[in-house]
Image 1 (tube, rainbow, N blue to C red):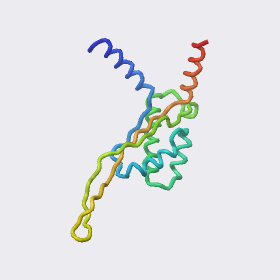
Image 2: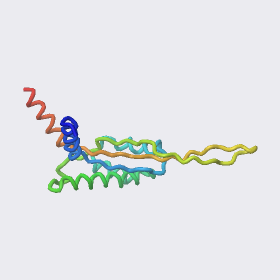
Image 3: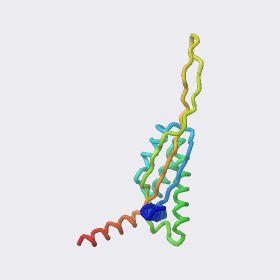
Image 4: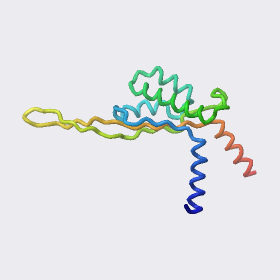
Length: 145
C-alpha cells in the first residue's frame, strides 16, 4: 500500500474511533413512515429522544428506540471510563434509506392485476458528543488568536 493510502487509512481509523454509529437494515416498513419519526428526534439530546420515542404511538418509534439504545451501548463500549450523564450525547445524524422492495401482484377486476410494492428501509443513526464539539470550537479560537 502506498504511503498516501496508508496515511488516509490511519486517519479513517482514528475518525471511526470517535464516531458512534448504529444501523438497522431491512426494516419492513416504508421509508416514508420511518422518516416521520426520524425527523422528530433529529438533533435532540439522547435522553430526551429516548423519552420522546418511548411515548410516540407509531410502530417505527419502537424500532428507533431500540436502535438508539444500541448506539448508546456502542458509545459505552468505546468510552468505558466516561459517564453517560457527564457527556452530552445527541443525535448527530439520522437518515433513512430505501431498502429492497418485494413486488407482489394483486388481482384486479376484469382480469387485470395491480402491482403491490412492499417497501423496506435501512436506518443509520450517529451519536455526537456536545462536549467534544465545544472543546474543538475553543481550540479553534485559541489557534486563530
